[in-house]
Image (cartoon, rainbow, N blue to C red; front, side, top):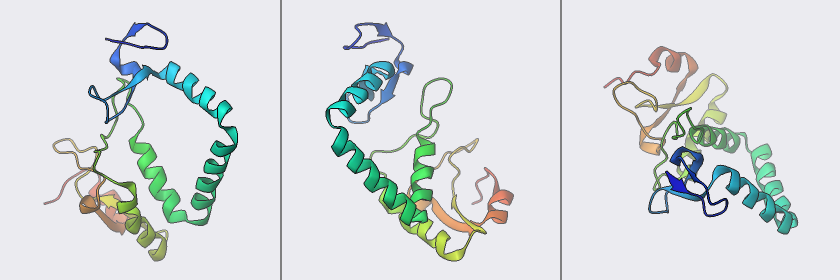
Length: 151
């Protein structure tokens, strides 16, 4: 249980977002209050926010490799039914370090994809989304491999 400073309610920790920089690893306020904070911040800084969002949108539109990498990182941030991250993201892992793999896929064509050598959702071991754990292989090889880890 954790108390939200905005709504002053004691609620389960699963209703707090993840923040690796804090001592307890959670956002300071609950998800609903953080949503309200973001709405208020958007109203106060609407023009600068629109400018930043437009810039990112243009980058994604012009560079499909960047869009694919961004989608992969966003999907790792989704939460399971119990409130924890499906695949933990390490603080030292940087999204930009994985970009060359997604650029290589764009060069090779649609029959290739970025694969995790040690799967993120394996039964015995779980890998990370870091350059040392990525490889470019065909979709057929990736389907054949599945969630297995081959030494």
